[in-house]
Structure formats: C-alpha cells, structure tokens
Image (cartoon, rainbow, N blue to C red; front, side, top):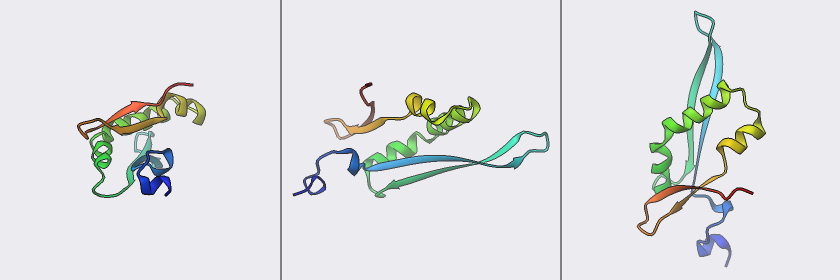
Length: 102
C-alpha cells in the first residue's frame, strides 16, 4: 500500500495548510496604504491541526505584516519564517516544531 493508506507522515500528506494574504487595495485619507487581510485553510474540518492554525492567526498575520513592513524578498522571508511542521505529541495534542536547519 502507499503512504497515504498506511498513514505514514510525509510532507506530501500534510493535514492542514494555513495561508495569510495581504491585498493592497488603495490609500487611506492620510496617504497610507490600505490592505485587506485574508486567512485561508486547506484541511478537513475535523482535523486537530486546524484548531492549531486557527488559534495562531494573530501570530501568522504578524509574520505577514513583518514581511511587508521590512520589504523582505521571497528567499529572506522563507528562511526567516517558513519551514515549520506540526506534529502530534503522545497525548495527541499538536505542537509546532521547526524543521532542522541545513
């Protein structure tokens, strides 16, 4: 059987993906840029990792705003903020663990 049928954990069968989008829509009356903030989820509604993503939306928006405010290029933002995986502990409560640095 394949990995999915055996429930082997691989990067290809991630349980939850959370994404944040900041869309510039114009300027405010005082000349500052105006944005719409969006969050999206790609997961099963009953996935336990969905709750982890939802409870950390504020932190994820802060990361997105840091990228915009610091005008980070893709590679710098990726190295600084991405590459994290969510795993389950023995008590089945999820936690976030960074990937090993290469």
